[in-house]
Amino acid sequence: MTSKLDTNMRSRGDRARTRAYFRDFAPAMAAYVVAIVAVVAWGDLDGESPWRFAWALLPVLPVLGVVRAVVRGLRRSDEYAQLVQLRSLAVGFAVAMVACVVLGMLMAASLSVPAGPWLAFSAGMGSWGVTAAVASR
Image 1 (cartoon, rainbow, N blue to C red):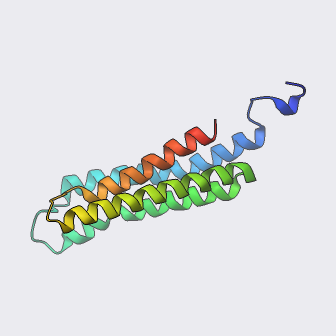
Image 2: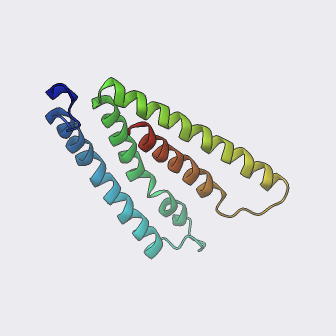
């Protein structure tokens, strides 16, 4: 390394952006965990009550907070970090869409895939995370 600019250490601004991201992300994710526990404990999703639909949608509210945190974090980041994240999001989206098509075609052929939407979600999120980790090394 030829100067202080070439260091692998993160700058004070990078650390501040990371802290701001976690201040947005952590409460939303904690609320999501609480909502999931509440749905499992009291939601009675297999019952007959019309309230089961409200219970089923309860975790969506904290997920919107997670989306807000990710968007705000993306806006705070520098151009290179934005490029890495947007490319990673594109890969995750493409993988999720392929998974949706594959699962949809299998379901059209009468194959029961009970966790199909969660498989597509997991494939997309996993590929986003792996792509971001590899691209930012």
